[in-house]
Image (tube, rainbow, N blue to C red; front, top):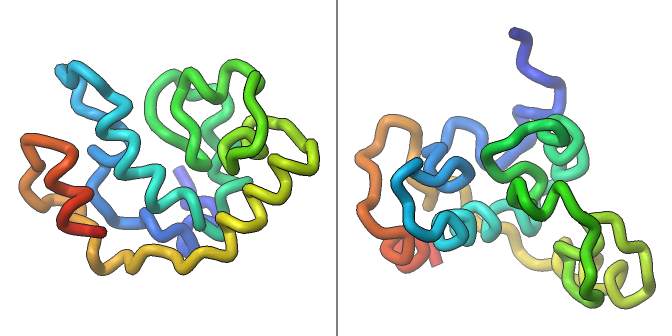
Length: 128
């Protein structure tokens, strides 16, 4: 399988996958997804990533969880609502403002092969 053209620009490239694919035994996968969302929130290639994961049943793509990718948003005013397809002014502004935020330094993220964290909040503490 060939690496997509956009992948080298993704800040998640080569990073620990548990941030986008929570452990199967996780009681609350959303706690794990929050780590990935920190990275995805300012990702320059989120649209391509979201498109690549459109049919995936697991994992975060483009900053959205599997459940979020399945259904349009019922709320307004968050960057995730914009990525879920809402193009109202509030959602557009929220997304635009989020993309203007300083991206996280990928060097702060655990790499593939690093030991897994037992608790997701510890990773957030370390990277933020």
